[in-house]
Structure formats: C-alpha cells, structure tokens
Length: 248
Image (cartoon, rainbow, N blue to C red; front, side):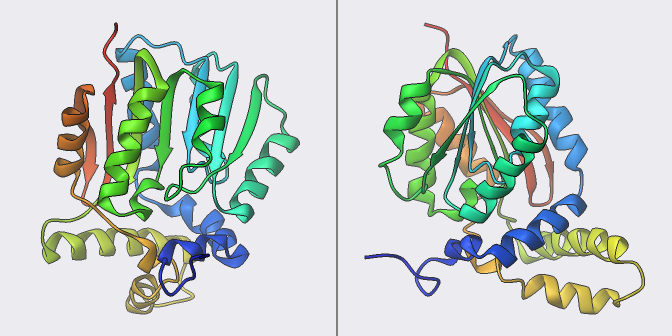
C-alpha cells in the first residue's frame, strides 16, 4: 500500500511547494558553513581522497557540491525520494556541469529496492548525508547505518550532518529560538519574532521529523563496527558526526 501523509510525515517532502520553501529557508540554517568546514576537516584527518562518493537523501545536491570543492571527485551517486528535490539537483548540475559523473538513484529510506543500484556504483570513499536520515524511525536509521558500512571501501568515511533530538524541552526551546532568530533576521521586519516562531513550530515538514539523540546514534555506529566514531560539532539539535570503516 502506498503511504500517505496521514501515516508518513515525510511524504510532505514530495510536495513541490514544501521543497521550494526549503530551497529558500535552508540558507538560513545556523552554522551551515561550519557544518561543511567540519566535514572537510574530518575527511582530511582521515586521509581520504574522495573520488567515488554517495550522497544519501541528496536534496538539491548541495552536499555533493561542497565535497567536490576540496576533493578530487570523479563520480557521485545521489539518492533521493522527493522528485521536486531531485529536479532541483538535476537543474543545479545542468546549469553548471561538474567535472565528474553524476548518477541519480530514486530511493526511499524505508525501502530497499534501490540498494542494488547504490551497491553497483560502490564501494565508496565517502558517504555523506545532510538533514535526511532523521525522517525515518530509529530501527530503520540503525539498519541504514549498517548498509552504509557495507557500502564503504575499507578506510572510507561516513559523515552525517543531521538534525538530532534534544534531551529536554529547555534545549528544544533554545534550538527553536536559534532557528527562528535566523529566519526572522532573513525576513527583515515584515513579521514579528513571535509570529515567525509560531509559523516555524507549525511548519508543514515538522511532523516528518523523527529525531534521535546524537549519543544513541554514535552508539549504534560503534555497535555496527564503525571505527573513529564521534560527534565533531553540535549546537542544540544540529550535529555533525562521523565514523569510518576500518582498513582491512
């Protein structure tokens, strides 16, 4: 049976208006440049040359673009289940054709039919995901992390730029206010702060979030066999964490 918005909040991302709104609002996410700088530093510290990369839940392709700024990317495989998001990625790479091959794999994290296409393009030097995996239940997150380990080459790295759970309402409130300050600042004086806060908390994509604490996710990665697992950056509910497949 096809899932609906009633039983799957993440289906909202297949709405073109939601995707278009994110294209604008994502530019106001706090610490965007810091997230990518941390990613680059982790890749450098691991001594990886990311020639073959996998971008999970690639959205408009921004993570792939950022990796390619400092890495000798030769091939990038992008997965996404939102057609409007994939259209944005295709338009991005059509407007500025990269020097590397780009493959697109339509893939829903809650299903496995797309895994074969991903495996066929591997193994990968780097798997990156950005604000995507938090849309699936925790048992599916853990299962996907296990798949990622198998898709990496020995020594390869997984970097997740992610929205994670707060451990108390106080920290959740602090996160929401940080996000809204950035949104309000970008909007200028057209709306009051409390109005923007109310809109943020009622946003259409909010119910799609199934957040897990970063500590739990680090534990899953370690238990699955990832090495060098740690959270390299965290500000309230925004985190960058990573792990490597041990060299064999």
